[in-house]
Image (cartoon, rainbow, N blue to C red; front, side, top):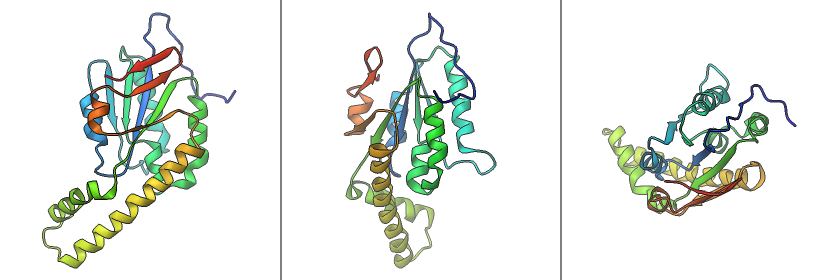
Length: 196
């Protein structure tokens, strides 16, 4: 077994705990889904780009330590290391494998949120125009094209990660409504649990 940096002592009275890692390109609805699922029993943690002043997994370990001692049975990460891998850091593979082996004893599942570019394209145009009100059409088009290419690259890498890298189960959200209404079943070591 891979050595753990620290251990989680199981408590007999404690509920089963599950971590859901939401991943997907920009503007596909990850934060909306996470927000709709947040409750007294479900902690949602939003992650941005990895910190530059410390290893990217330190924050995730801190999340787990803090949450594991709580009464909450579900934690949802809105973005995490998968997004870093897909966006710009495929060279962090060794650190990802170390992290997953360290926590392989927890119930962790990936949920991918995928939308075709044509579904999110207008959201990107609106965001570009709002953030850069003085840009001309050419500048907007160049940023739009870069985002379009990033969107496709993101999903190419995300599918590769899910198919060939992670040890945790993977599910795809067909829609934000489906997942937010608790219709997605996630495998659990003791049967199935429903997200709600």
